[in-house]
Length: 79
Image (cartoon, rainbow, N blue to C red):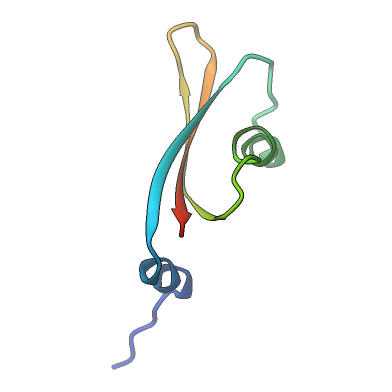
């Protein structure tokens, strides 16, 4: 019996990680049908200050009390 191992998971488990949560309130109208819009928001406005290696664990989109979208990203910072 052979077990397949996801190499990314194996690599991440071997290294020490810290989880950080980042959020961004989106005030301008956004075309959510274009997946590159969300990707560019994450890379350019949320995670551009990170110098080291990281792995995006999850991405979520939510509404706040003022009916603005909030983009929430959980990142594993790899030491």
